[in-house]
Image (cartoon, rainbow, N blue to C red; front, side, top):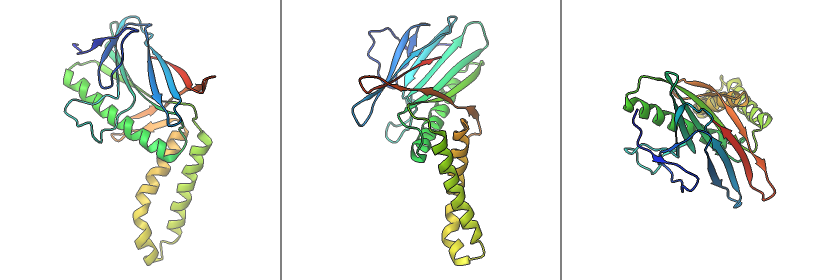
Length: 224
């Protein structure tokens, strides 16, 4: 498989939407500046020795316009020398991962990069099986808060259903039901670390925890 990629070393200034090849046990950093001017910093390391490793930050296919495109922070993959498989990784940084708006935005980004990644592998024409791992890198994965929001939306659904005999009420409220059901379902699944994408692909959500350091930045490690 021929991949158009730049060779990465510790002196490389990483650019977005550029593929880099990287040796095993060589680390690179994924960094995101927050509104309070602190940073989320993730040290990423490919552990598999017998593989060709690549990564790209905010991957976007060349035929797709940048404006309006949503992408996960990291798309990486290892082409295994000893196996007939490709291990692919899609991760996004979220300082906080508890509000429905944060979670829905995250899912949009993962859906987009997953679709783009599948398209990239198909265009290369490689017959190997691609095994995906999907995750969120966060300093605050609040299961209880996520579940609480799911219950809130389910309560709204139940309240609307109770008024099903009220034609005037249902005329205004019935249109809200699909959106409410979608939010309740997604939040229930995410609370259990289950991620279901648009095409039905289902993943166990990997939660990479960030810890606040003395400088106020949140740091963590991702081994892939």
